[in-house]
Length: 143
Image 1 (cartoon, rainbow, N blue to C red):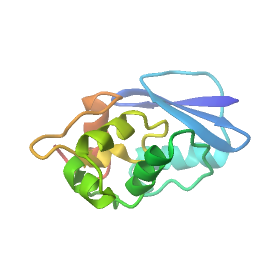
Image 2: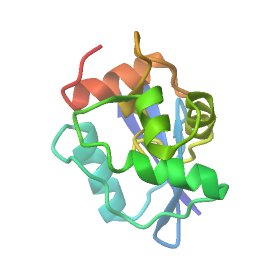
Image 3: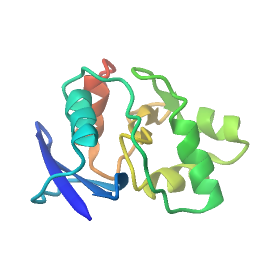
């Protein structure tokens, strides 16, 4: 297992990789080491606003429902947001169930849960609202 930290205006982001597959991304964590160079480059380019998609191999633990929700996040275009309700309707489930799946997302940014907002506000985010604001700002969506 390897991990690498990226420093941002909101704090450190730590990416964990094993055998060329990313399996965990944590906000507000710092670790020492290096991950696969191509993966690190993609993260750096994304954080600098120069990359719109991350396309490296991942290892995703989770229930079938969680994986279905997370896969749907990858279909939300860069620079766009949807509400919990809109996503739930598309998946034929409840907004609360969507929120619980997003809370369990082991790969935020790769599965861009920051693109899901509440009807009248930015909504929640496991890394903290400052991270969600920063990620949306990188993508040109300000709240």
